[in-house]
Length: 616
Figure 1 (cartoon, rainbow, N blue to C red):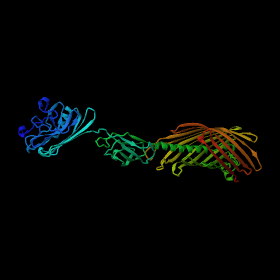
Figure 2: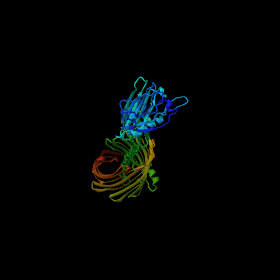
Figure 3: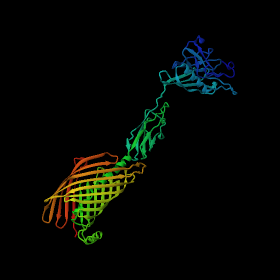
Figure 4: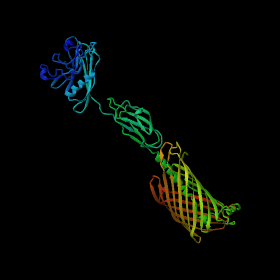
């Protein structure tokens, strides 16, 4: 078929004709070439297979659904060789213009690749039982027929078994003296998207310490880099490719809120070009808020216990039992706790100058015993915890007035300082606070005393949860205490039952820490009830009187510590002591105790000493 036979311009057609098999009698069905999906390499443009052509010279066929892919040659008038890639269809034969020639001013024939690909797709969709056809390539190595020596075609489609394949064929015909060579292949197309997992992330964190994690794909991928890792409330760095499917990365928390880690869809692709599906998000809980709350709560609780233990013996303000000397010293402790203290008052320090001060405060008195008294005491304590050490100091000042022989009213106030540190000495928390309020002591009858006090105050504190920054917080607090004390003497034996109730509460005000976390307000509260007898026996001697004593005190305690669990329990405390009173007015006392009977978590023991020496 020559150019003059076709005319100067060939018509465009996608599907020219479908011819029944009888129209091509004389050819075997296997030998008949059916559909030209390519360009003939000849001086004249290839238009279509037809019955005037030389039969298709078969190459090994490649199955394409209900069709076959094959190659062959077709000799037209002239010395040139035409080579084809062809589709053989079942039970029918098709002539189709998939490649057409165009005549231009330069007498040049070219290709419209878009039309060619559409034509190939139409034929395969219609006759080959292949779905979702995608023609990937249809090309030659030259822009004119006379120069072309190679033709290539490739396409993908899904067969009836649901599998997707890629067919590729290439035929070459460098000159008429050589037979054309056909290479063809059919491969299963990988359509499975790579999966990705985020591994080895901690379940929780506190602070901003970086942590490593592993990112593992289900197959080898490319194109994955640091920008593909999305970190919420933190940053990613130091991405290292351990292999083509495994990477490590370092995550640095920002310190505010939970850290979220995502690898989105499309971050990488496999060798088939499938992009990954998104990884399941990993959330690393930030416990810095809870940890800070716990540190503050523990600090306030330990300080509250020390404040309660340092409350004064108010009954002595009425009985005058502390008037053994101008200044008293005491010490007690064990391996984990130690306390030092002192106490004195104007009444104890009986000097002319102080007597003048008492008369100025109480004009009705004329020396000797005065109804007005000022007193002061101080305490220093040290305690070792499981991971921290606590130091506590308090100085208290009080003033009272004897309204009647059976009633004292007064005011007292104290300043306390507490510091808590790690075993290495690093600050955990510290605070400076005060409390003040009234108290009253009354003799209800000859053998029964009642005292009560109510105090309130505030504190300014610091906390360093991580040891890398220090935040300030404030608290408000109050304490109420009431006690009944018996005093029954049976000769040398003294029986002193005690019933006491104490409640201490403190509220930490909310604040925003240095990392930007909101540390909400929290409160602690402790209710305590003490009940038990104290028995003492007086042994008089020359120059000194000795009084051994024994006490068994039961304690009920209820704790409500912020967001922590509420707890109530009973325990018992055993105390033994020996008091020595000398004729010169000096006194010496020694005692030992064991507490926590019935409640092992509150087990404690210790010993104490007290010495008062007169100076007048």
